[in-house]
Length: 264
Image (cartoon, rainbow, N blue to C red):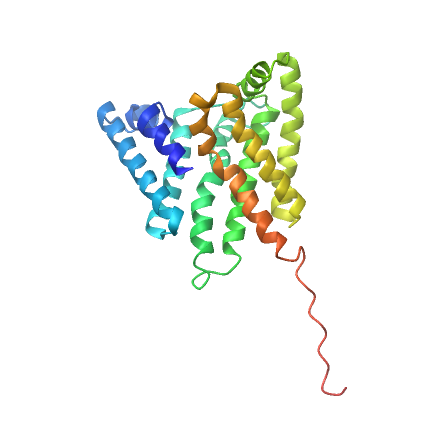
């Protein structure tokens, strides 16, 4: 995830973060110069590269916590600049639907925190990382489920372009129908991830997260899609971690055996 985002921030550079830093204050930006905004992105990218290398060997809280903060900053930038898909709903006001990035970024915010908590069980409850991982995965699947239900043009393009690459004809109407089904399943996954410890749910979520992350390469090709797939590593990484953890943990806590009373 860190390596994909580092490439996006430092090489691609067209991100909501630089737009947020450079935009005028009256539209929610910081009104900073474009050169300073780009330099700030490069500095963040450098932090992400260092974190990626170090975390491969061990987790360091002083690196992981700032990475989680970067994900929050990206969510704020997407919110302030109205970047990405904006849901238009009769039931929800625009001020609420504009908060969608805080859901879709959930897994990327949670992944560094979950790893940090997992490696420090002596300082935090043993299951605290699990709660963070479940919450982050739930937010991500819920956010993307809502985008699918409202037929995000970006998601429709992923389906249409992927189908075209494999030589399958698909209409836009068919893609939107498929998105409706995907949205329902994503919302169901989000609910099950926080209400159950079913291993099958976590495994399915991990596989589906891998497919959706990889759809960036199937739609746009390896040259343009590889870093977007890496950015979404947490979408399948968190459910996979939960699946492994639940595999060695009973689905339900064992019922303690009744203790004998002193009169027995």
